[in-house]
Image 1 (cartoon, rainbow, N blue to C red):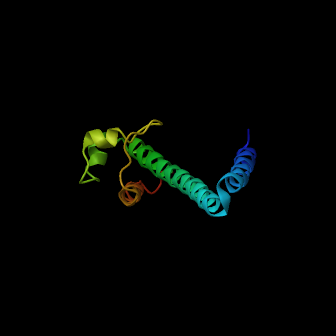
Image 2: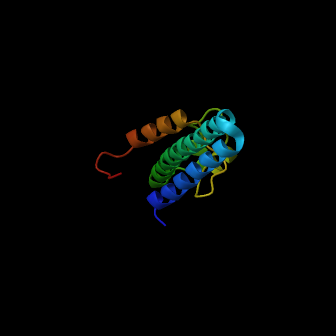
Image 3: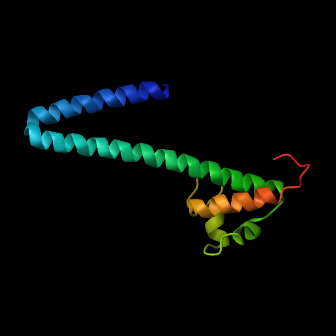
Length: 121
């Protein structure tokens, strides 16, 4: 199922729930529930977007580290407040740790600057 189809189904369900809430709980409570549901959906969308961006940045970090043959200890040196085990948990598809986004971007920039000029990224 495509993303727009899922969004259409979720939107339809949300409208049906809003109409039901208005009918069951009256105008005031129904509107409160409607705005609460909209807030939850909006926060979920923002969280998904943020998580996808952080995953892309971490993937880039580990890709550059592997390309330059750096181990976890060398990458951990770029993150002064986190240890080797923390950064080990930020690898792969099932991440259990997300370092701060600013520090990841800074580390990616440092690793990109270390690239040999003739070497492709």
